[in-house]
Image 1 (cartoon, rainbow, N blue to C red):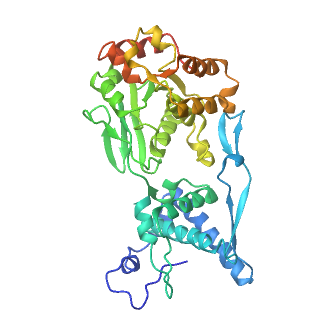
Image 2 (cartoon, rainbow, N blue to C red):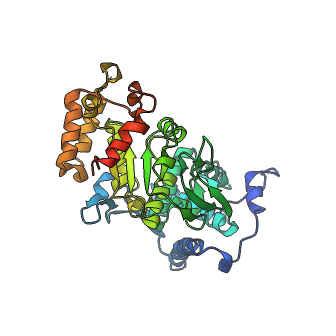
Image 3 (tube, rainbow, N blue to C red):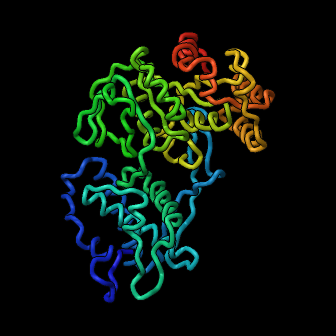
Length: 394
């Protein structure tokens, strides 16, 4: 559904800008990953054209992105998407709009690849948003209407959003003994100051290349506040590691970066997260993959990742005071029981005991609570001891 400028549209509209876009880069000059993604989009368009020529109802089979179509692969130890699909047809009144929106998003992504440009999710929404000629109908009413279509296209093409040249905002950082090349610029992550290297949304091999690395492992912490303590204390230098954070729930760029560092450089991943259902969930996402992104677990999940802490028993083991306790809310209790029932946790006695202990305690703990012992207790005592004793959950 290509965007067309109504005859009455004034000059200078977004559609004029689209019409004046940069010329396409020759196909043979594109990176290999872009040629592959472009081919998938063209195949999708060819199927529509073939159906039209044969006077058949064009349709798309979109893999179902719901809990009933997700399974845990015990052999690979990751969450995977099943084979259920939902058919989206042009000549079905209830599906026609979403069908055309899907093709419109594909058209927009093809244009980005052709021009070797990228845009944000928000940018793609505005790039494609316009009034359909001869009607008062908008292609997309809101951003919330566009986002699921982008995800539908990802799973249909089995391509990362980033391979479609669409990115999210940066959220996450890294510091440590590694030199990488980012879009042609060489970056020494041991010389990035207090802020560290900001992990971008797109971290694929055609954008970021690892050059030199002297790290022995990766320590991933939940929040940037804890990360700053580790960075200020130069934990990464003393222990020859990469120190990363994802600003809470790690975004896709951080997960992909951890995946690449683990698989390409063979670096073990240890996760220092809060002792609460949210910390358990973040670990689950890093280790097995997320239900919402089950179709990308094979390129994001790290089954070998280990949970270094904070643990339920640390309240007594570390001699913490009652003032650091945070009472469990009903939502926390419900969420903890849901996580305990996840297939990848259900059969692990250590994890069942961990969650049971938290529920018995009746409170949760943040990593920052260790500051009550000493400002650098987490970097100088807690984490080094857990690593030396191989004291983690798997």
